[in-house]
Length: 299
Image (cartoon, rainbow, N blue to C red):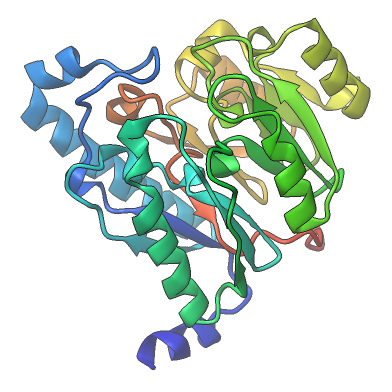
């Protein structure tokens, strides 16, 4: 009851799901970023930096005006700390993920339990279900673009192209599909980030010619911000855009300046331990109050 009273006290604040980093580890390889050997050589230091980085990320979200819902970690599921892959959320409805790799399939049950708890608190209304074998890794491969009123979806590395039909049927929303052709950018959120003002920060080398043409067909040239190799390697495209604040892993000065020119404040967070597992700021969050209705502009 106390929690529901607290929820009711701040109904309009952005709300993000994060996972406690206490069990985070890099112990297997399912993407080219993962480096268990580097982690094992200095485990205590990396674990301490991971806990500090997660706390800094949560603080950055709160400072940007968000509420943070911390879900407990689970031993043996180190990548649970990346809840962008937990599911797709829009208009109080959630479609939970199905993971391609066995190492992450154990995350499906605790993520679903978290969604059930949020529904019990009145934060979500409906929880869907993908068919068996229909691999789709949540908001990491399905990003709502409120300015353009459609989902951008990624496929070709983790999520199946056929999953788009299930997403469209559940949410009754238009989708624009992009094939991911670079194994280092295995989820769409690693290389593509719609910003609150309508711009799109993206890394062209993650897409083939057809994908680039699709992006350019839907986004005006003035609104496209190309990430450099340095930006992408620093996991800066994997960012959280919240009003005029962009929260990301520590960014090169040139990228910060380019975003500042467009009126954004960049909040850097040391997320190097998570980059050793192939994740950044966006990967570590899932917005629970994502709405298809664009909020009024703030002055």
